[in-house]
Image (cartoon, rainbow, N blue to C red; front, side):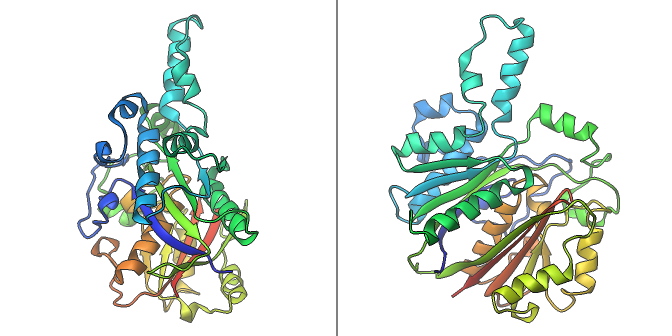
Length: 348
């Protein structure tokens, strides 16, 4: 059974909500924040005031995804998030300290749970169907995607809304900086892959997809996906990639473009340089984390990017790669060199 992607929407540090990726938005900081769209066109004004930032952007992206596919109510809602609603979590913990654990406001606590985005989407749509949230660190989005594919193949649901949402707050940015995840010196995101230093740049975003077993006009198919967790460096080997493609009766020559997950960290990116010199030596390679930054569910932005490229029939100049005709894209992503995923998207 084929899995068709009927529509896809992303809110990111680029103009992805309007599908404008030709003009690269540049940042001279190690923290990339999303460009928020006009929510009033998608959400009720009274609801917007009560929503935190991640809930607004997640719900808006989901609703636009459904509208683009001309679907009123999905058969299931599945999301993935590694951090959940950090802004509300930070507010609740701060108030707990400031007010000595007395007379705490309940709203930040209620909205701080990881499944708040998925629940809010269901409330907004009045949808009582299957609703699930996966919190699997660097596999959060991939787990949600796998769940959606299984539901469709087992004919438990169709027209499934699946996506991810993660935010970067002041508190989380400072904590992750202290853990040496980000670069010590700030630089432009355009120069991310040429810094040759340790660390990456922080990012955030949300992306949603409508999956179905019914063919759509664009006939864009999610051909396959695989995830594996490793503790040793360089476990995403040419042999693993070759086996993944072989399982779908393909070879690397059948891939028109590879979107890889290099993030500007000199140690992390050595894996991708090795792949570029071996199995991907004859395939155009585009990297994407200079567009959205690095975060656990950034692979959802990469999948949105693959979908958008195939739908448009061209590679945007912001990816710094020239490739005239793209019909099949392999997304090859790692997070912290431990969470590895492969996703294959093609035009039928």
